[in-house]
Length: 499
Image (cartoon, rainbow, N blue to C red; front, side, top):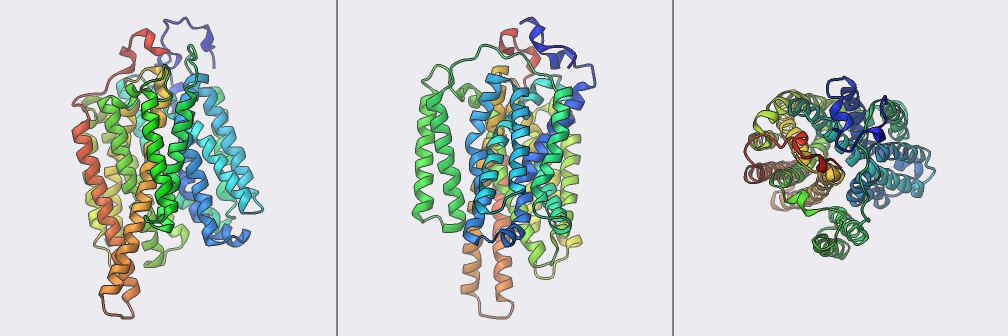
């Protein structure tokens, strides 16, 4: 950094904004995108490695879920706190803490000699990821304030957010097959080392303003409520919706989150100021991304099953199979998503993108026992990818546009929180629907040699139709909530709002 942020007078523009003419902020985008990729791909890369890790470390199927749940619980429940801490202590500082902590937790997981050590490492990954993800998005928001450059930056960032899951599947397959499942965790050390070097040299941050007292009741209720909700939804997938271990945590989580909202309306310095979520554009972005996140799991989870069970794809082939969707997401997010968002805003783009993705999911319901990848899977993936690119880029841009800079961290945390909760709801619901559909098909048809395969296929069709419904719902919600016209521009805010 060539200029210390503390030397700037209070009335000066943020350093990132004043450096708008230089190339430094585009290097900053590279650093932030690498960090985002690391967090997003870790949600799927370990899933590919789990069966091998299970055989190596010798734990049972019931325990296996905790390797995934440990990460989801820590990440989902601590995001709001992580976002607020980045507003309090500096986004760049929390970004570096998150990066280094995530890397060390990954090293611990890679060296795990048993299930307990692996679960602890995954929980630590989730905790540091909860510090890293909001800091990255809020740094992006405060670095790119020009509408057109901001559109391009969020197009790239949104494409990575949408495509990270597919990258995780491919990288997980390659590393598991040719190296070791442990490298699915060790790879984060390489990514983090490059990102830390880039953050120290390329990232700039605004001076931290006056620190208000941390909202402890808000922290306790937010973390407690989100833990209950994510835990209960995770149990719904394995134990069913009627099990006490599912219902009780979900009910407690919802009640505690209601208490959290009540607290936030009454405390002087809330953890999540309601002005952040009550803005129509930000509320629209949170709702849209949460619902679309639920639908996305129909693609990654159940299409992976179809590719491996019916088309007999290896882990690497499965990862490669998703690459065209990744390319389609990148294309639409970095072209239409970035070029049109500054001109027309998210209202026309997000509904169109969600409906296109819904069309792709409907196409997938035609898969049968004799389908091929090129003729029956690939077209659907391309359609879905083009739609998702138009969903992710504008919603992430809208989630942080026009927000007071003192709230940028917690506004960024909300987009990650709703995506995590949406994903948890989607996984639980779709898994439940799939099981019910398979059972119904098996009991209502005459036994035959193909019955098991046909029942499984029927469960996939049910899931794809449900995912299609999620995307249609996201389109309706986006149409109703988003305001017409371009997004608010940060640099038009009065100087007092910059701290």
